[in-house]
Image (cartoon, rainbow, N blue to C red; front, side, top):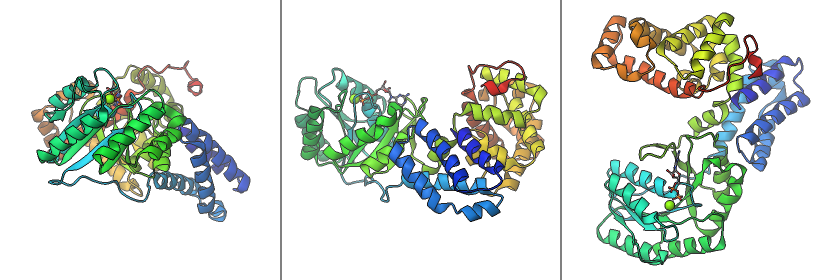
Length: 441
Ligand code: GDP
Ligand code: MG
């Protein structure tokens, strides 16, 4: 996607006169790319209209940073679409708050409930979990298991079949015990059925939640808007959590969920484990939406950055998932040789936001050089290892000493390496094109 958007903008750079048509062509291409990332059609249309209003043709025609102007406009528009204008309710300590989770079956409610409880417990809240899912066999066991692992008190029943009754009992009990964050897990059904919504309404009416969180699977694609809207119409959804962001989905459905519920996204789920849970960061999310996972765009750029004779070898290594520090070193070297870093950085998945602060070309160049100095103090074994665990304390200290930097800087560099490893790890298993024919990717 990122590549497609950048290409569309680049194409516009190539036309001599930026007129209405050139801009429209560009925006249409961007529209198609966003639709593929599950951003819903009406939203993309809105964005298109807004961008046309913002982007001034005259400015575009005269300035040489057309690309920056348009890219910035798209970025800002997407960020705005994720901002419903008011923050979500946040639980207060020492005052019992009830938070109810809703969403379709399999969306990740039960998992996310525990993550949410665990997250707050670490921040000093006294969390508790109530299982009001009497629909799915094994629901209580699942919650019990999660809660026990996280050492969070829980309430539920194997025999009671009335979800409203259990929810009320659980909430009452934990209120008496002065718990300040009481989380109610509810059942979901396959589809948006009337009975599910009726049950949800009743549980909400009986427990009077301070916050209802709608949990949505990021992989549901274009169905996001309708689904979120259906939930919002039945209960007072006040926040959204998007799950399974560790999968292939780009997460464009988040924009639909915000539009449909008029509520902010507060967290994202990035795995099955308790701590695979992140506070939602709008800018980071949009960067990811725009710049992540487009390997064809990335490979195109690779051709520009990496000298021709090194390309097949690099792709070969990456396709096996061996992103070593030496590869990072070589790529940094290539980047420094390239000249205008900004252009390249804006294309490289994973690098853009962190390493390339806005207007900070000089700083990032300095940072890269610093990183390379540290890597110069590494042994071959360290450079060729793809296991960051080899870096124990004494090695880190040696590298810091050898390069005249401080330990935290070495650790920061290794963090950056780890982050890039994850990004580049997605190259694993890609098909390597015939020699000299990388465009076929
Ligand atoms: P519920 O029916 O809405 O309560 O959904 P569950 O919490 O039972 O989750 C359904 C499945 O999705 C389980 O196998 C979870 O482990 C999995 N799951 C939930 N959240 C995530 C996530 O963020 N990433 C991944 N990879 N799996 C998740
Ligand atoms: Mg469940």
